[in-house]
Figure 1 (cartoon, rainbow, N blue to C red):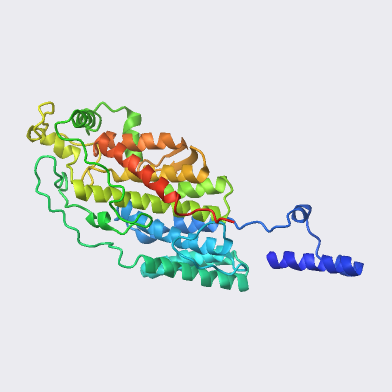
Figure 2: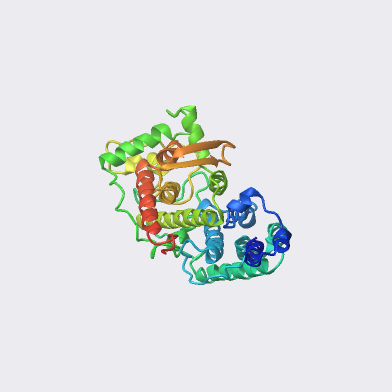
Length: 430
């Protein structure tokens, strides 16, 4: 479109200068709208949403990964796509990269190539399905120099992210050696599984310099008023049977077990007519801040190693607190994930997500339609505070976290995101 626009303006200029009416008449007729718009429209962000939507089925086709483990790959793909796009379109600072693509390159082709290369290299078994999606993406880009340049730059962007993340600690052996004394985590029923994905607490973050940068103060003591109150709350509202929960509270607990945040981001970008650069920035900022919040939560889990509510309630006779009482048969609504209580990873990532969106949008109104695979329903969150309220409550009502693990986690995620947005994904200064 740029070459056609340039050619037409040049032809009209020649006709006007020389008075050759025939030459001016030979220029293809433009619509009134095109005549008013002298700057070519920026490309749509649809290709970004398509590829970020393809990550889950590529990296976890059988549903075996935890939410943070899957989030890693959303963050990797999103940053590669972001660098590929803004390296051509400009407007925002690239993520830990200084390369610039040709201004004549197609940013749509670059986005598709970046996502395709990163996923194909990392998950070769998904090659056939990825090739089909890649061919469909490139079919919407006119053949020629712009496409070739875009593909080449997108592949460079993917290779750069892969190089950045080499040896980052994924899957490393990180033991949890704390003795299971009162207050200390130990495997929980029904599966009594060992500490899952402990390496997340030592994973090299994407934005912050160290997993412990935003580590919060210790949780309340077992004999404190706060601990007593919060344990009583989760005991009453988080029980599988005989709880004080309302049906809506039960639905909320289940709703937050498996959210499709990527689809919600794409839907927001489409409804609000984000172009390709703004869409790529949205996905990159949202996914990297959420991932670093999860890393921070796992760092705290490793450092403090506090027991889960199911253990705390069943063994309350050992906590030294006369205001708590044991119930050896107590069960939570949701099966307890195999890692410590403090901090809540869901609440931390939720706080990071909401603070990222309000920071990017410049308003507390986030306007997100978020589908849940857990309930098969979609909720509309108009404001960030409503989402944060529900993500905190959900883990209490599910019986798997104390409220202090949720509220502190949520606040940590918000602080981390505010810090990150001051340093990453910023508009380019002119």
